[in-house]
Length: 295
Image (cartoon, rainbow, N blue to C red):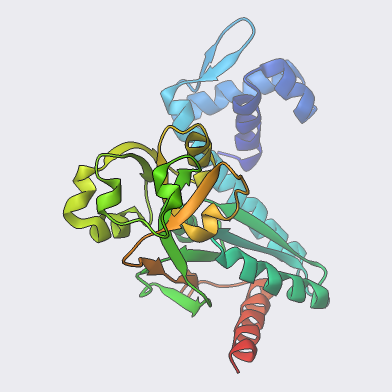
């Protein structure tokens, strides 16, 4: 199974049309169709449902798309690492993080690093902690920024400054918007949206017996879509303050929990995993920058 053919497959999967894909790939339509048929024969399964004007993925095709994208990403990352082995520090540092105020601190660090090493680029991946950890394990991320308690036995880590308070994002017209803080009892019977993965378990533990007394109407991955639901006054979104602060909207207001529920952030990377010079230099810069700020 060649990486080139996997790229062909991914292009057709994205475009859902052989003709458009062949134009993008600059190969003939018959040649592209032949490559895909050979891939199906190699895997022993049908990857596309072919119609007159479209080609959509089968269940097996959807599985291959996930795996093929991982393979292509890792291959391109490896090629780039070898291409950037020169006298001038260059390359790409890939960082995964959720929506958190910690990114403000990280952005300042990246700006200072870029002034020193302008040829180093960054690839930022936004998702929840579980997805970030999955990419760290697969090697498609160099660094992860994780929120809350983290099992760090398999990681090297740097503690990042500051903390994130949990609370609730509510419509401005909601009575809770007039309160200084929100308690567990305030959310009994209320329609709420909660993070599907990552920190959701910590929130559930904090609520204790009151968790089942809320009306968990929806779960979300990143806060953006949940904030839209809050804006439409459908319910309230449980989130961290740093994520909520990204949405400047007078119609929605963040209120912290009481008693306070707060977590810290940690920068992590896999132990014993070879690093490019760009990544190792960036991590050393982060250490030096944070130590200097503390002193």
